[in-house]
Image 1 (cartoon, rainbow, N blue to C red):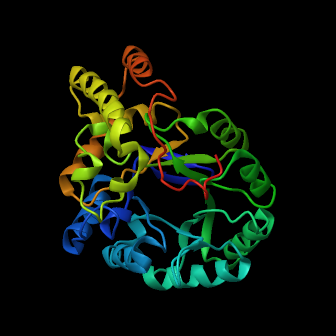
Image 2 (cartoon, rainbow, N blue to C red):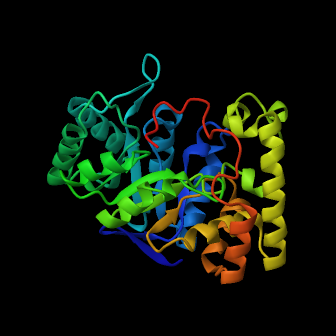
Length: 321
């Protein structure tokens, strides 16, 4: 697996999103999930992404068990900021940050985090206060590098004035390109790498995700506007065009989507999530795909920015772009 750099942090060119191993995409299978993490490490996919809210702590515990004898092989990232105790709310207060990192370290069974993100931002708490508290964790040795998730250009700039930010994690894919206008240029100006989550648009880019009415209630995609009614039909047509291009290139739609992201710059690191070994192997192989200028141009014609219909979340209130 090739390597890329986020700020001063070296990571594998593709990471592994672990969220779905605990919830949001059907029932969990801990044995297979741990096998997926181990196989990822074997393949060189060493950049692992979790968060304290995934499974309300279960995902960190799962990743911790998987890394028990292999911690030194992984670049480990987790997040704080979305609390689910007594309901769901965003908390960026310094006091919570200090307690959250200790809880994450305990669940993961490690003495430090390679990358620690603010998962969502509470605009009631000045970003300078939150990043100041995060910077203290670096000084204490609990955290190596800092990150933010789903913030706008102004917030990112203000954060970098307090402490270097290695990575901005935001949704980015052929189906989600709104950050290209201002956020991605600002990140590049500031030397912040872009970690692209949902790089296959939660599977929609493969054209294999059933419509919302056919998905089980515990599947997150059942409730997303992009997978509803006319939006779903329109987006399925776009995905069909992506599949045609992938077939012509001799790769899968998922590999095409990941290779497209890798071609957007060496500061972009996709973190496709999966809990299945077959999908892990398929995704990891995208690191070896180099799209031609003609293929990139064809994709741009097939799925130009703004072509997708429907919001990516039912509630967009906690996102800054």
